[in-house]
Image (cartoon, rainbow, N blue to C red; front, side, top):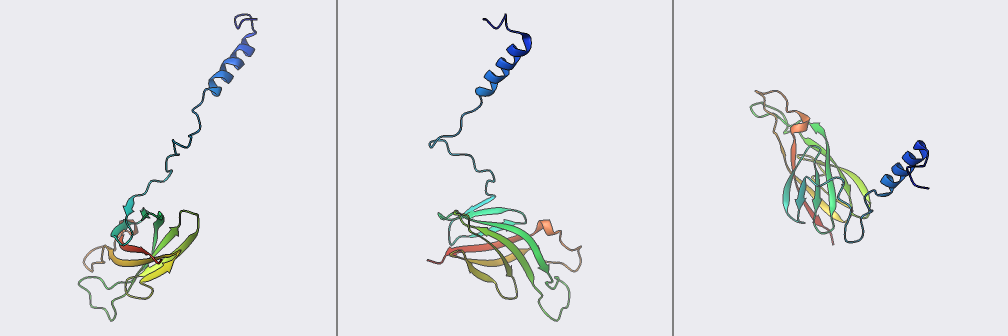
Length: 154
């Protein structure tokens, strides 16, 4: 029986089935799946790099992933102001190893911890920008950038 003699609904069903069966093939070993969330920053172990709010870095051959989650505290004394203390900026990061181990860490500019050893890596916070200014509006939390250095512990 040819498709010209099949009832119209059955011919349509066969055509749709044939089209769906021709979908794209699954990637093979020589075609790895694309990274679903490409890194915003790639750095080598020991290299200092800047990470913006919401950005993700992949560090070193171990592919340690670090995500700038949030500004947990901003109490630094603004430029041009008189303050009894320097204040502190605290930044919260998500950390994940290539084998799926995860951690959340908070690093500080003027309090401890300024660095932490987690998931076989030491992560050190450097500068946090922008620095508050007494003559300007408080910085938007999304405009922050943190400077980090990451080194394997072993």
